[in-house]
Length: 357
Ligand SMILES: Cc1cc2nc3c(=O)[nH]c(=O)nc-3n(C[C@H](O)[C@H](O)[C@H](O)COP(=O)(O)OP(=O)(O)OC[C@H]3O[C@@H](n4cnc5c(N)ncnc54)[C@H](O)[C@@H]3O)c2cc1C
Image (cartoon, rainbow, N blue to C red; front, side, top):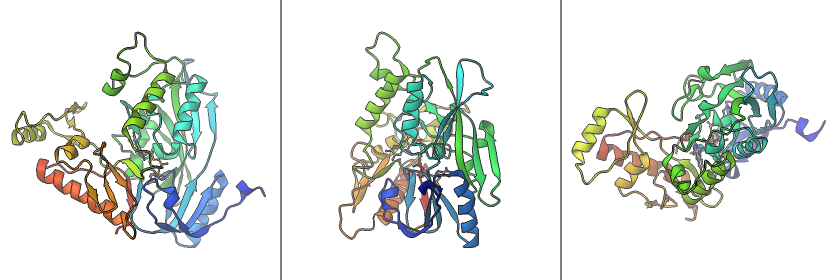
């Protein structure tokens, strides 16, 4: 039996190095799944031992508030395959990614192959399987724009599921996997439809500005480089300053609510950016709300709001004996309370919170 063929369960596994907030929670049971047939073994083990199953990708969108009782499955299913039976036209290619592939590496792989569409999503941390959970998005593009279908295993029955794009009920940082299929399946692979003709999307203001002096349209690889540059200049690297990216979703409010906010915070005091949605509602940047309330750079024990990014809560991890998990959740609640009082808006937490403090 080769090493990748073996299936072992560890107990009391420390997850600090496996979550980007570096919270020191432990998993009562833990195993790594590098082969598809490990999934059945893992589900059988969980059933026999009456354990919850908790899939884990790269841990960049989770808050481990306490130890996890259950079987944590670290998904390492790899492989990137071009689908030859692509039913689309010659100008597109369908590509299947194992759920354990690193997302950014997958983006770069496709660009080098001359398959385009993922460039604006460069450098988002995490694995491809988890990308579908919250329909990752950045710089005007979302995973849902490219996803054709995905395969998953039903945790309860072990049945294989094949979901088409419309079955996934994608929304803004949302999908069926955060709703009716929450905790019910393990995504094993996703298939994306990419184009062979470069068609870059520079609608997002920061990207437009980046290329404002170019006389010709940049290549998708240059757009990817630009996205990486912008992200590196704006976002703290979790390896240096543990974080989960945006801690809150951007709220989507009605025109009426926006009118009320403007009335209560009369100009010139307020210059709230707003993005009209297809349904007539308006998306407003949560970062702007947090900054308006002077919480950017605010520190609470060993955690805080990043000094340049009002949406990113960071774990400085520099106060001996501190309980960072408790502090981060207290800070998040304090921010939510402040925004509610100031604007009457409920800020929704983006990462998945496990356990409580
Ligand atoms: C610095 C930084 C920047 C970020 N920027 C962005 C951004 O621009 N846009 C954006 O959308 N997100 C962003 N994120 C959030 C994060 O990168 C994404 O949500 C990413 O998809 C999470 O992937 P992961 O593998 O780390 O998932 P994890 O954190 O491991 O898991 C997240 C959730 O998905 C579930 N899950 C994971 N894999 C599977 C699977 N195969 N099957 C079933 N369930 C699964 C887990 O149980 C968990 O509930 C950022 C995060 C960081 C740290």
